[in-house]
Length: 296
Figure (cartoon, one colour):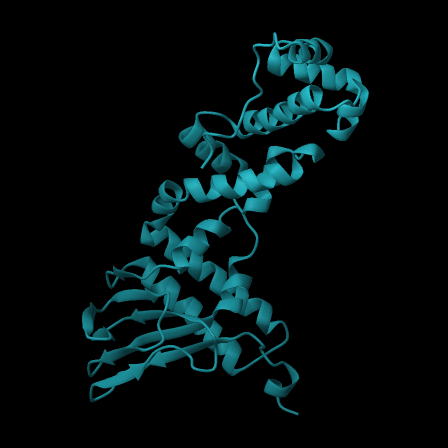
């Protein structure tokens, strides 16, 4: 039994080395055997042209191009061109992106086409070439643990691309509303469980600091304040519209004891739960529990 049979690399990724040839040649991009792939083209020496439909754009080496939807595109390579073409299936991208604070930003990047010119002495050129060569070696000559190593190399490649692409700032600037929408849905589903901000951030795939920055920028309030406002609103509605006792309202909202609930409610509204209920029933109350009207 050969090494390939003993240690197959079951990771849908294909890395092709572009060898210097005497004639120009065309390469069809996009794996037909995969539902969706992403393609990374890394040119060292030489030049190429990327064609999609009736459009064409030059790619002058050293350079790289990331193609989010490569199927149907063609890469024409001039004679003497060298480099790599990596075709990566979506399932492999998901494994490489993983579940980290930066994962959402990485996904923002892989969904977009971009080109980057490189200098011959640019360390990024050497780093990408080394990692692509390592992935190719693991696929061509599989060994134990090869799949894990391939994913590790691809993760490093994606992080290097993120740092070089400049898309990190674009992701931070353009993703505020979608993150707030997802945050709101999470709050709606878990505010009674008193999730800490860090757990919301982890579920969203971003860091607590990033979530804090988005909420401050978009709503001028902290995530902790927004969660507390949702809890206070639910408490106010229950006190006003239900016949549950204060102790029962406290219990349904996940508080450890009624005293803790009363302290929270008074801090949020300036009124004890009992006084709030009396004012609400009499129609004399001036307090309206916070709403989510200004959320996206």
